[in-house]
Length: 413
Image (cartoon, rainbow, N blue to C red):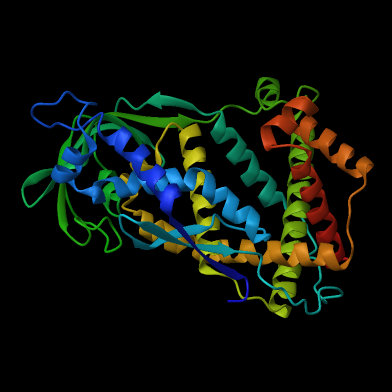
């Protein structure tokens, strides 16, 4: 591809020998050779036992400490993903490294204005208002223990479970006093459905099968979960009164009529935002379809890794690790990577489109625009402008974000 720069560089003589010496000085501290204290073994004896090849990895690291950045700087191109480095050849006399630097792909814009897309009109019905009120009430519902009765969809249960495959308990398939909302689809298909109808204290064997897209050593296998229901809880919705309105943050609302009017207003605003987002998405999708660009797989991969990192951070905020989530759902890194591929490709192409539009339209945000956006973002997150800039990585991030926003306005006008 045209945006791939290949650079081959040889390191020989004193440069390579110094790297090997540093690698040896590091390795000898841990070398266990009879007759010599660690750190005092002569180089010749060390090489006789372990071979010079044992120094290569550390020696390459020594070379790359300085050379990696130097090669990128000397190339006079701007990489869009972290450049890769491969060893082309290596021996006691020299090292040859092959650097691959990927720059921004060439973008040829098609039609990106006057795309003929219309924005959806929005309305809010009385039924939607009632459903939204039930939804809001569910967030403030009290979890009450069901002394009698059986598990129903939507109940929260505290249970013990043990999973067995081929009669053997498997790792990660057991827990004690685990809290689970029935119907949340947290576990494999059939598990939560199998709890419906069980009573407190009841034990049961769930004969299930792991999905075909589960982790490698369990996918498609029969599994038996021995479960015991310890506690069943149900949600009791609060009454619609002044206290309820205040709990939702509406201190100025006193009546049910006022509350319904506020809920309708919020729904209308939400629908307008959704319609706007849909409109922007459709405009970008059509403009992307009209342009020509060939995106390197490495660029897509880096975007996927960024998305997985975001998912992992969101999981941490909910008190669960990505690994735990994958164990419960049976999703592997490969499956997750594959599932995110289309979204990552879409994001990358939209970004390339907007960057090209900004270039063609000569979009350069003014200081006033950047300052205004900085203030808005700081206010939104409830922090000072200085704290915001430190958190996101500096003013240039705001400049870029403002430039992209202005490019979107051009595409959607």
